[in-house]
Image (cartoon, rainbow, N blue to C red):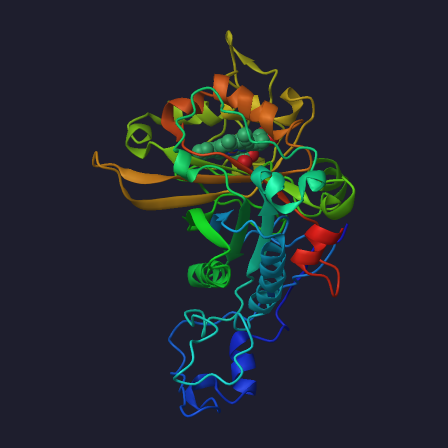
Amino acid sequence: MSENTSTSTGVSRRGFLTAMGIGAGVGVLAGGGGAVAYSKATEKTPSESTVAFRGSNQAGITTAQQNHLHIVALDVLTDDPTELKNMLTTWSQMAERMTQGLPAAEVGAENEYSVPVDSGEAHDLGAQNLTITLGYGPTLFDARFGLVDKKPAHLNPLPTFPGDQLREELCDGDIVIQACADDPQVAVHAIRNLVRAGSGVVEVRWSQLGYGRASSTSAEQSTPRNLFGFKDGTRNIRSDETEDLNEFVWSDEAGWMEGGSYLCARRIRMLLELWDRQNLGEQQATFARFRSSGAPLGTADDPEQEFAAVPFNLIYGREPAIPVDSHVFLSHPENNGGARILRRAYNFVEGSDTFGHLSAGLFFITFAANPDATFIPLQMRLARNDRMNEYVRYESKAIFACPRGLKDGEDWGTQLFNS
Ligand code: HEM
């Protein structure tokens, strides 16, 4: 299946405004009795790079992972299916515009007596490769909206895993919107304007910012590091691994899920103060990789070896080179019946807890064609045995079914209710 492509030729938000005679502080919006002057562009460099919004799959799954995340889960307040459907239709129109660098809605005849249609904070920034990915939680398919028969096969609440220390207010939700962009404000702007448009129909249940990508989804990207200092995403499924994507990422269920994927999210607090007191040997044994190069233990600590095969059968004296409780031993496909998952995680740091520690961690997102066969058994295995568990705390869980990409002329409302 085709992937949404990134391009730098799209019409930018700034280009759109300039075309309307209101860009770069030179113009004035006509209409009504007043006039709104737009200020000069700030010092920030806009990025005109855009990712196609329509395609067989939604963007934001295998799209080369952008640097910033804002993800929000919402609960639906209304019981009226028409209100829900109309909101989804409006959202797809807004999302398409914003991903192409345009304001959230047609600016039209704004004046000083009207409420601006776009909140404005991404005005000078361009599209920044923004992607907006939508998903539906299990609770959306209860009796409220007549969607019971449309519930996807694997859309069941995630189990509670051993050791979970869940914060209920950060779990689950009726709908999720994941916005990824190369500028944080562009991602925040997208979520804010969609939430604003859904006012009265939905309310925010939880929301999470991620400031640095902690996976790579494209062979062109280098492997980033997580907050434990290790390269993360080395063995991820890449956007050019078509066969594995079709097997492990894209759903083959009929209807709107054909080409969709399940998004599973976990907020994982990382106990940095504890980690930072461990010696390098213990840190490396936790992942079975060298911290510096990302190469597997048992090979050379050399960046050239990052993608080398993991030597599971190598023994040093009486100990295996790859500890059997290490994160890589437990999660490697070879030790999980060949199962793979696509990871799209982000680092986060947000203030501190009340005990004088940084509140930091990894917002783990994975996309799976069948989480019952891949993500859930893997997470169970890690929850029971992972050496890393001593240094982390799983604080949330959520699952959503993300529909396939939109065809030309289609919108999210009609896609869900009519197909
Ligand atoms: C704070 C949480 C986590 C951290 C710091 C972390 C870190 C890492 C690191 C450093 C690697 C090795 C490099 C790589 O191949 O990407 C890795 C691999 C991997 N992780 Fe995690 N991880 C976390 C959570 C999870 C979770 C929750 C899952 C799934 C339930 C998971 C699944 C995997 C998989 C499938 C691999 C690839 C293993 C391989 O094929 O060799 N990780 N992780």
